Length: 514
Image (cartoon, rainbow, N blue to C red; front, top):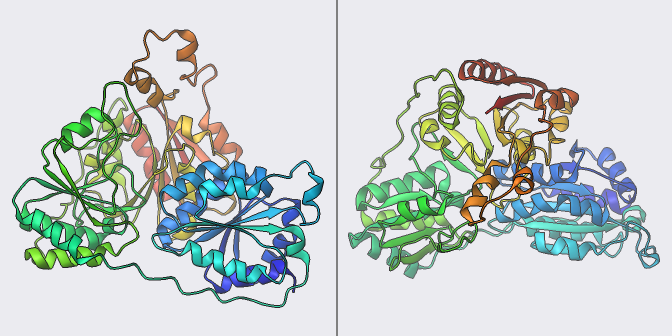
């Protein structure tokens, strides 16, 4: 076998059996190996940012890495924005990046680039494999790096001759290390704060946002009087009827300051101290009140569940004491569409087991309250802030969980970055319903223009934040990629279209005109 085949066999043996691909000439032997080796499932993406975003969505729902196949430095460059998002989300991923043959690099051909230099800022682990006999072992190291808690981006660079030369081995991937236990002093400190009676907030993310972790935190809160909140964006949050409810730190700085103002102590469980998304004139970067003490119970890569169990035992939190969300459906709205009426329709119709890929930006900031009582579901946020993640994230989540309905909440400006994901959904008949909020603007930037204190913006400035002239036609764009689509302008039309989309097992798009 050649180096490419030894690498693919190592990947499949090591549990990496999904590859989101956009190959080029230097990767043709790897493409042939993907075809030859049983067990590898391949999904073609028409833009590398779709491949990297889909691998992120897959990892969030499985906890295991998928791979991407990218063409040289420029292909990696096209993937970088969603690799940034995946790195911020600590989603495990193995990137296979083609490179010129080792002896060809010196000639500085048109596609020659500093691939390691491009990969470094969006990877935790980077290596260029030197020859075909090394590539299997290097692939195993990449998988092991990706599986390092809480999840890492591993980028393996594959020179063309490393792929086509003879190889003689398939490597075993080292077992992933377990999460380290939280130091007893951190547990004792958290218990002391919780027993003090002072206003205390548990701020959570990571594995603590899965149902069992939420239940532990809910038991602690009900026993001690502490409150619970998730950080602003999270890799995956389980929520809905029967699950301990959790709100997030608001995005707008004034709202965040108000919400956090009562607390004298914030205990971090995987989360970062609350900070503003951007700097604003005359507003603080740190969002906790002056004098509030920040305590860390668990780092993101530590065993948060064990830590919560130890805290729950120490404060006497009893089984069954957590307050869980009651099932409820908001009144079905009629008439004009706005963020509240859209949320009410979602809260009425969201099916059990849904996966929400949320890049709704401004429209969706208030969706949580009216969807809280829906049947149990998962909610995925964009943790890196680079727009264009929503539809690729939904694509990867659907590949990971083909038996579950995926609902993508997408802003029209963000959606234009990676709408090629619709084609991948159509080709592989993925069960994704995409809702595009067509406000014909970069609405978030219209608000930010005022937030940063820019004075008296004129037509030139306002035009850069406007998506009209011409209006985007999402129905035609979706149809052109093989996806059924419809446009709605009121609540009745939205409810009818969403019902149809949820009933379908094929990709479906709804353009919600605001």
